[in-house]
Each structure stands twice: as structure tokens, then as C-alpha cells.
Length: 180
Image 1 (cartoon, rainbow, N blue to C red):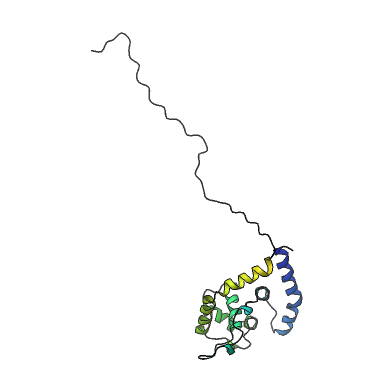
Image 2 (image 1 turned 90 degrees about the horizontal axis):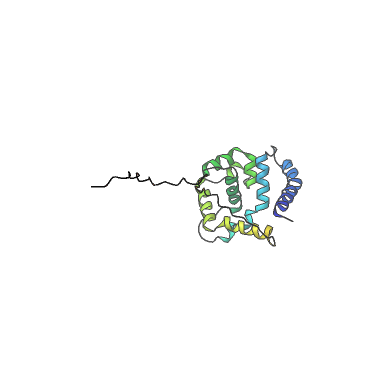
């Protein structure tokens, strides 16, 4: 099965199995963008790659659960929020988005500094590359990837051959006269 077929099958199974149950659980029906987020979160499963809980931490104040923050990290990219503050505003204003990311109440949405610390942790731990590597391993194992590279650099060339420059002819000497 080709990659495109695998992804469309997976998206179809998510839509058939998960969306009806989500619509029952949520007060407001899902928008198309929220359905895309659900599908992406289901395929990527970013929470598999972050710490399971704060119980593994033994020094300092306990960290919040990172799975909801990781899901928010994906949502921030999908919704193209340029800043974390914009993401927090969206989480606080949209109940569906908040619940899809894993924050059940408005008070569960952490502060901007907590998001920033978590996002820097994700960057340091190379979360994006680990998730990408897992996706490639899961969906492309045994596939032959064909790749064609084409150079689109402009090359200056002439439409017509260049005209030859003729040397000027020397004036013809008059006959019968001597120099002198």
C-alpha cells in the first residue's frame, strides 16, 4: 500500500470512528480545522514521545503533564499562531480546541512561561525529529522512495548566434602612384 493510500485510509478510519464520538462529547460541533487537528493528533501521537507524567521528576516543583502541552505544540503549528500568547488566547476562547489539546477547564490552561519552558524542553529533546522518525519508520518501512531533483537555475543563452564582427577593409591603393 502506498503512503498516500495509507494516510487516506488512516484519515478515513479516524473520521468514521472518532468524529461521531467527539461530537457527542462536545457541546459545539467540530469545525473543519478542528477535525484536521484531531486527525493529525491521531496520526502523529505526539504524546507517546514526551514524559508520561510528573511522577518521574524528583527535584523541584512538579511539572505539569507534558502530553497536553505537546498537543498544544502541534495545534500552535496547525493554526499558525505566531506567538505562544496567541495560542493561549485561542485555548481560552475556544472550548473545543482546549479540550482537544487536553485541558478540560479554563483554569487548566497554563501560563505563557509554562508553555515557553515546555516548548524549549521539546526543542532541546529534539521532539519533532523523534516524532518524524517514528512516522517514517511506521509508514514507510519497506517502501522505495523515488526522488528526482531538478535544477531550475536560469541559464542565460542566446536565441540567435552572435554576429561576427568584421574587420574594416583597408582602403584600396590607387594604381600608378608611387609613394614618395
